[in-house]
Amino acid sequence: MTELNKQQCEACQAGAPHVSDAELAELIKQIPDWSAHARDGIMQLERVFKFKNFKEAIAFTNRVGDMAETEGHHPALLTEWGKVTITWWTHKIKGLHKNDFICAAKTDALIN
Ligand SMILES: C[C@H](O)[C@H](O)[C@H]1CNC2=NC(N)=NC(=O)C2=N1
Image (cartoon, rainbow, N blue to C red; front, side):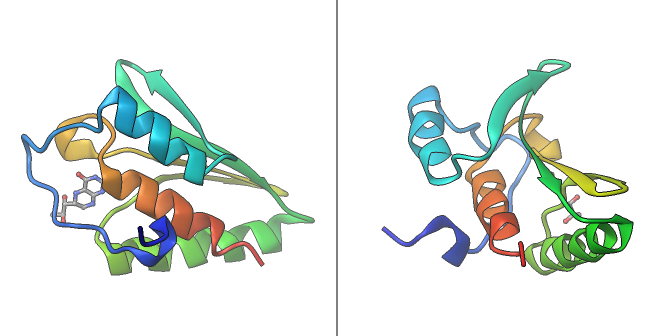
């Protein structure tokens, strides 16, 4: 099967199915540094990235932003001095779609 970070997001419609528990268990193995948790009842993927300073943190943030624009799928981004917290979920379905796992894998590929 094609590696997650080599796949492209699909256009996600309202009403699209959430990933099943079994699919989540399989997909999360490909992004082992990410956690899957519910926040306000919405399942999300989250990872904290550490950097030497703010300059590197904001540069990484901008690379992720460019990827999100390319994919048409967007994360929550918290950029701090030396740290970026990235959270992926699909707003339209208020949960996790395969797109979120693809974008998490693409995010990992943007680490210098
Ligand atoms: C119109 C636009 O394409 C949609 O609103 C996209 C934008 N980016 C998105 N990003 C995420 N994470 N979830 C969405 O449902 C979503 N929808």
